[in-house]
Amino acid sequence: MQPHRGTLILTLGILSLVCCSPLGPFAWLLGNSDLKLMNTGQMDPMGRDTTNAGRICGIVGTVLLGLGCLLSMLYMGSIMALVGIAAAGGPQ
Image (cartoon, rainbow, N blue to C red):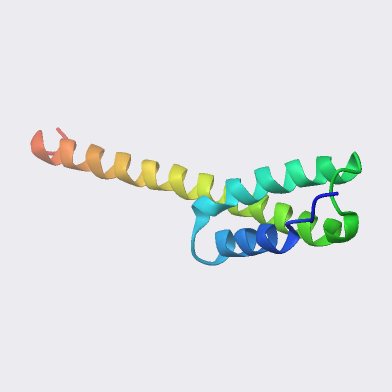
């Protein structure tokens, strides 16, 4: 039986919320794979709660990363539109 990686997954999930959003998908994927292994009896189930908490933090971190990217693209698009309007001589 493999040892669980709950502490690693929880650390990645928390870091994705606090300072490094790109770690969120890794915590999410590792958490999913470890929970599957726990369900089939191939991994130590003692870390199930820690693994699940890290997976949830990874999901939240991934959603926040996606929202941040979307808002950044909208911001840059609006700046480009304003620069284009100003370069064309303003509104007619």
